[in-house]
Length: 98
Image (cartoon, rainbow, N blue to C red; front, side, top):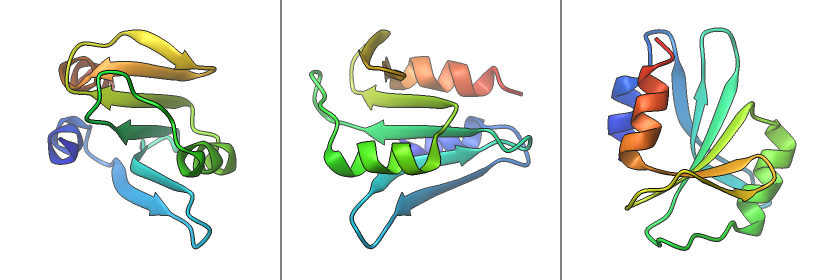
């Protein structure tokens, strides 16, 4: 899933897994050529919950966009500034950033 999203991102973007020693983590952090950050958490559940580590990493990095990717369809807010999307939906958003 992460490789698919990285392959759709425009040239010049950077993507990585983010984790601190304190346990804050983000499954995929995309940095766009203009230095905007998008944070993505990957969940297997159709009813995702955000962990403390993800919320802490989000507070530390303050990404422009935050997504939770689920195996089905999404398209709804999960928390303030966090949107749940299916893989195809997020792939379209990333592809649209070209």
